[in-house]
Image (cartoon, rainbow, N blue to C red):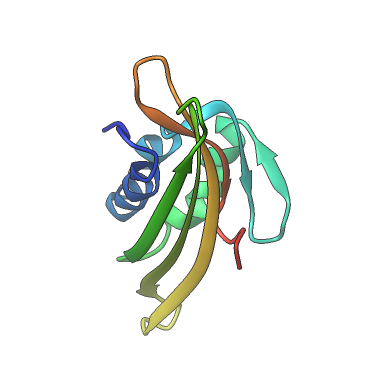
Length: 126
């Protein structure tokens, strides 16, 4: 599935993570996109992003809630999105654990009209 508007990138990645579909999640990133890890380290490229997303895919029975707002550039080809998210999953002891964050991303309109992540910082607005 492809994002038809900027904020759909966030929605689609959360859906891919819930389905444990790593390749669908990685497909939402440009080939040289950057992703900021919880440690603050920045990784670049789909191969590195694939490795980073494995931790998210490993969540057991993740349920996401999000609120997303996007602002497009004047030419309509770039957008910055910002949101608040929470994910409930099972902890190592089997009890529910809730993770939260405030994300910020940059997405770019592709030649076919779809949108892909250029920069993804899941906790960039915390």
